[in-house]
Amino acid sequence: MAVNRTSSFQLINLADDADRKYFQTFLPKWNCEHVELKNKVFAFYADDAIIDGHLWLDFEAGWMTNNLAWRSSLNIAEDNSLQKNCRVSGLVVTGSLSLSGSVINKNGNYGPSLDVGGGIHAHNLIGGGAYITVIGAAKIDGVTFAHYNDGSLSIGEELDCPVIINEGHDLSFKSHRNNKVHIDGDSSDKKIISNTDDDGNTVIPKKLRKDLITDIVEWDDVLVHLCEGKNILLSQGAKSSLKNNAYWLERINRDCRNLAKVPEEEITAELCEIAVKQGGFALQYVPEKMKTLALCESALDISSRWTDYAGANLQYIPSKMITKELCYKAARAITCIKFIPKKILDYDLAYEVVKFNSDEIENIPKEYKKRMLLLLAGAKT
Image (cartoon, rainbow, N blue to C red; front, top):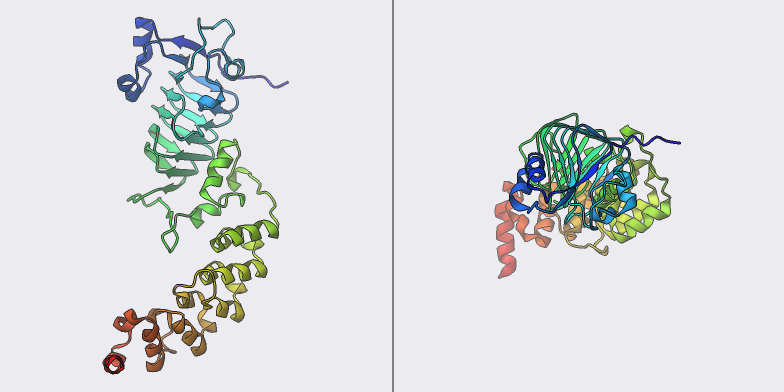
């Protein structure tokens, strides 16, 4: 039988002025200034503490004084009872906090507060609507994930964690190391990895995806897995679930851009053909070794679901496959001069590009421009 190593926390009702003043010294400035502490109830430990398992920072997890299962998770003695059943507002540890599991705050709108006077060590650290304050350093073995714009996650010293992800949250730390960092918005930090693709869409960056199990396809998958207490880092021994062709087929039929999320070893010719037929720009997600001439030609087909500027997909065709015939097809499907190899471009081809995309008149070679302007002017009269 496994031994529960969790420290014995106690419940404190701050109705007493002396207890409240003592307790306030361990609360963050936010709580002291904006929360009426009187009669609030907190779980409390006045030293370094251990929690065996996960700490679920969601009121839905049973943060009530008479909830026996929740009390058991913090090893709160049965005789440490209050006169009436009420919500427990948060947890305070005056020293450091060590968990064998993770700190998990799934709800992005609210949650019990967590205040640690020293450092913290956990597997994963997920912050949402709860206010989490660690005065010292944080050693997180897996992932730190801060989500939504309510609550805050504050680390007073260094955050040592392999992967740090901030999705629009109030996340702060003095320094970080040993990690890859993904943060919404601009940052001057050189360790920040991009969160957008070539089209400006928010995606899981390739530099991050290669470290994750293949079950992680979209950003929502990250949060779902972490909030289930799962490990998602391959370096931490996490194992991907096996997925068959039908699974990826359903994803791609929903959106051809999902071809980019298929692990390269699981990409098939069928998946590529369906994706490119649906939207020619999906050719950019096809491995070079799987790009056939027929597939490249279909990427220029204006009969796909996304037909605007299908000719621009010429840029995703390997240069060794590009012929003048393909360039003419691209021109008629609206393309740009810059996508046509210089060795192929001539006056007639440039004219074809401008004929279907008049904005490109500014980008044709100088030696063609005067003649073409005169020709276009004559065509208008």
